[in-house]
Image (cartoon, rainbow, N blue to C red):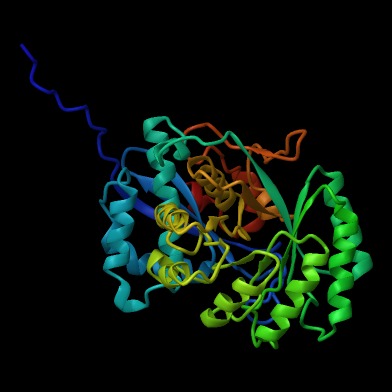
Length: 393
């Protein structure tokens, strides 16, 4: 006689006691998101979710640390006492109850870091890596592309040559003088120098960074530039147009001889849908530290997969953002590359065991519980005024 079904044992709750954050300062990489970024500026913050049961999870946020600390006070009434073992439900609660304060802005970025930390907690509680919790393990390693800003041709050659000696076999060059010096010859000289240094056996990608303030070019420039990039075997052309120019992106994708990539400035899955429906990208690039976290990134990636659009996460952030991208790369079928900022201490200098390339230039995907990486308090203290706030039990 069949036995009555017994429900599977459930995990005890892990109630959120507090969420703390610290800014990363002192070694912020250059960028073009407002005025010239200085090393002492804060453009990234780390988040810690502390539970009553003593499990702490960590996440990363792409925004000024002062905004993160202020935003956490706004969100506090919504997350205190919540079950940290339910990341998708809890973060959707935060999204649903804060839309009226500006969906897609600073609060969405902050929720991204909370969501990453909640997945880290769930992995630690279940003693499984996040990638397995997300549905499986398509791969145990993935190729990182070394992402660096563009320089004048001679220096560009030196920079790429140096990272190639470190073992990288895929590179992305972006921003810098490209398109901004209003000199098509210089643009091509920079790309040629990078290709010469990378060698014919390496992947090379180009990021115009047209989300920069007052980007000077339009569709015709992007079309001409795409033709030039094809001559140098460039694997994709990223942010070739202003970030809201969806009609131009659709046309560019149809005529470009190289794949068109973008999406790093979009947040939440709803914003991505028209770009996917209309076929604006060959490659979509949400940033897990902006878009809503791992929960939202996974939904966007699977949605892109259904439209036949490749997903490769944008990762100009921190070691925790990279750790999240690695876990997502494990769980998604066609995510065969991750972005790795070349030479950033926020990636290379805050973990107990730093990331290390294997002999083929790949990164092993951590298989320890949670994100599979561990922050080093002493190292983090070099880049924030009060690291104890992050690690307090």
